Every structure is written in C-alpha cells, then in structure tokens.
Amino acid sequence: MSVKFEISFAKSARLSGGLAILLKDTDSELPAGAESADPANVFAKAAPVSGFKSKALSSLDIIAPEASPVDRIIVIGAGKAKDLTAHDWLKLGGTAAAKIRNTEKVAIFLDASNIEVGAKEAADFALGMLLRAYSFDTYKTKKGDDDEKNASRKAMKVTIVTQEAAAAKKLYATSEAVAGGVILARDLVNEPPNVLGPVEFAAKAKELEKLGVEIEILTEREMRRLGMAALLGVAQGSARPPRLVIMQWKGGKAKDKPIAFIGKGVVFDTGGISIKPAAGMEEMKGDMGGAAAVTGLMHTLAAREAKVNAIGVIGLVENMPDGNAQRPGDIVTSMSGQTIEIINTDAEGRLVLCDALWYTNDRFKPQFMIDLATLTGAILVALGNLQAGLFSNDDKLAGELTAAGLATDERLWRMPLGKDYDKMIDSKFADMKNTGGRHAGSTTAAQFLKRFVGDTPWAHLDIAGTAMGSVQDEINQSWGSGFGVRLLDELVRANYES
Image (cartoon, rainbow, N blue to C red; front, side, top):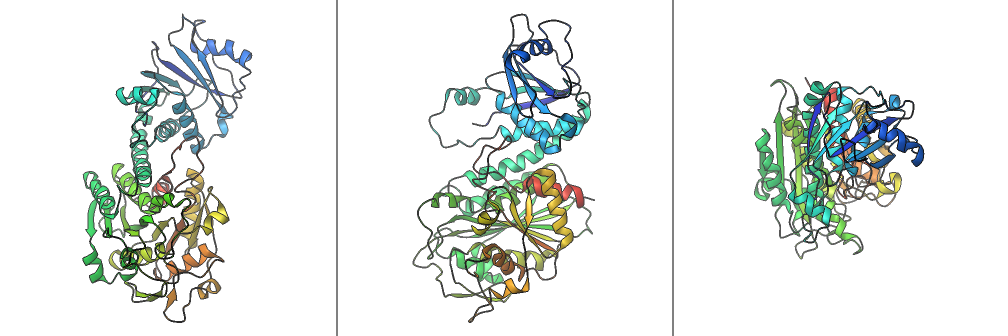
C-alpha cells in the first residue's frame, strides 16, 4: 500500500506532536535551540552517544524526551551538502519517506544545519518522497499491520520548512506531474498479464483525455488497412486483439513540428513458436515497459502543461504460441513495403516497433523520434541493470539524451551502429531478417529499426535491464521502475519547450 503524503511548504513550522526530520551536513553543526528539549538540542546530545557522523543518507532515529514539542526526531545525513546534485536531493527525500510510518504529521527542516536550500532542491526532495512512497500490492488480501493502518488513514500531512516556500510550492506542481507519470508507468508494468491486455492498456491510455491529451485507438482492422503486417504478425497467435494508440499533446505553437516517442507494448511475451524457457517467464508481463514509459511521459507533459507538441505512439500486442501463430520462416510485409523474414518469433518487439515508427514518421513528420523497448537480453549482458542502451543516427539527439540521463540518474550508454552490423540482418529470401543471431544482438536489433526511420533524427533506448527488475534504491522499491519518464521529461524541459 503506497503511503500517502499531503505535502506543503512553509518558512517555519510550529511543532506539536508528530515527527521532526532534520538534515545534517558533515561540515556544519545544528544550531542550538532555545530550549533543551528543542529537536536540534536533543540531537546534539544524542549524536555523540550514537556515533552519528552525518554520512550521506545515514540516519539517526531518536525518541524525543517528554518536554520536547515532538514525539520523535529523525536526523538524516546529507554528506557534504554543497556537493549535492538534483538526484541527491531526490534520494534524501526518498530516505526521509522511508522513515515516516504511523504518524499523522511531519515537519522536515531542510536548512536545519545552515544548508542553503533553494526552491528547486525543496521540490526535488518532495519528488523523492513521492517516488519512494510507491508500492504495488493491489492483489494482496493479507496486509501487515502498517499497511492496514496506512490504508485507513488519511494522507500524512508533511510540512517542508524552507525559506523559499512560495517558490517551492510552485515547482512542486511539476514534481507531482512527474511523480504521476512515473507511478502510472510503474502501475502498468506491475499489473498482471491476465488483467492488462492490449485492449485494457489502450483504455488506460485513453484516460489521459482528462488531462487534455488527444487519443486515437486503431483496431486490427484499421491496422490491416494500413499494411501493418509486421505488428499484426506478432499478435496473430493471441486471442486478444492488438491495438495501436496515438496520443497527442498540443502544448506548443501550432506551427511547431512535434517530437515523437514510440513504445513497445508486448503485454505478455511467451516467445511465440520460438518459446522461451519456463523459468522466469512470468516476468514477461513487463515486456511493455517501453509503452508504459511513453504513456507515463505523456501524462507528465500534459499534467505540467509542457509548452511542446508531443506525440506518443504505442503498439500493443500479446505474443502467444497458438495454432495460428507466426512461424519461423514466414515472410511478412511491413507498412513501409519492406519484407521481413521471421527467423525467431521471440524477436518480436522490433516487428511491433518497425510499423509504429514508420506510421509515426509518415503521418506526423516529427522533429525526432525516440523509441523505448525492453528489446534484448543482450543489453543486460552488456550493461546489466544499471544503464540503458542508447543507439542513434544523430549525435545531437544522442548528446541531449545522455545529458538528460546524467541529470536524472536514468543513465544511458551509447552503443554502436554501422554498415557491417547492418549486413548481419540481410536475408536470402526477403529484404531483411528479424534477427542477426546471438552476436551483437542489441546492435543488430537497432540496425533493424534504423531501416524504418529514414532521415529523421532517431534514437532507440533498449531498457530491458532498467524498466523491470532493476536495482532498487532510495526512490524506487518497485519491480516496475517507470524508467524513462523522468529521463525524457528532462530532455523535453531542457531542450524542446517553446
């Protein structure tokens, strides 16, 4: 059960019960309080006994003495506060959120040890709290004592004390929009596959109309008329019909060309006829992490009223080994007219994306296209769960994405493309085959996609290691991470808003 916070900002807080949280920088002392029972003085007495050194993200939990105006005091180490990045402030907020349990009100003093905290730092701290508070236990009927209490309690009232309270409140609206997009993406990835099929996913995306996003949903019949045989070939073994969802946010000037984001949405991937091993197959409910990220991004852009024209396109299918399923050796004709020999039906995501990319480019003529996909296990071998693979035909776009990844800590590592790799997917019987074999698997998958983008600046993000089962940290304890939402929102904010 996600903890609910009602966050406000103030220049001061009158303490009366509840919890006080203080930040402590390694290079300064907490100011002495007017009374011995003041939280700062309580900490000053407790720190030497506990050996607390204010190491970054360390904490000291103190039961307040009877005369104190609060019931409990937590001090969180900030390390060297002058060196803190935006992501460090998120982690501090996440650390604070993890400490808050079973209390009705909380006061957080960000500048308790003379740390200079601006409005953005305060808003980032609050965003970290919102992201850490998330958990997904919708289908658990038995809950722990804390979960039962949190479920019945109203949102915990949290006051963040900072001298730039008014400015922080304005920026917090953006933090809430970002958190909403990340949480939507996490929810989509975490949902079980029997609940979230292509039709149900499309219905979730349609809810963005409430925020002003224009939604179109193409059915199998409409996609067949467009010639999307590559995408439809993946879906033909499933009893659940495919969908293509087009989301448009028109926040920029009418004359501005849109930017476009395309997501792979394989709601469950058995591998088809080239069936996967049974062990771990349940995790293939997360093979729509790219589509989840694009949907979450569109939520964020609309919720914060981003001044940009943005397109989100997601191809939603299920890959099943039915008697009608696609076979190795089949040849399909993509929307582009290019033919594809199916070598392995488990290399299905690129078949979904190639038609979605071509459709997006042909219809919208965007400034650039970025696709996100849990595409290859090979990227896990190369980069593990710590970074996503970046492939691009445009150095400028690749540089902007890399910078956005460093700013949000949703990091990317650029991988190679080239003519020699491209030859690896040439086919004897068609224009190309859908896999180049085991070696350079992530690169040959990207080379396949590159054949469907023309001269449009394009980037492919292989998020197989980061969208699901990624390393948990101070701002994410969920299996589905929502990776890509903050990254792409930062890309838009830093480079493309009018």
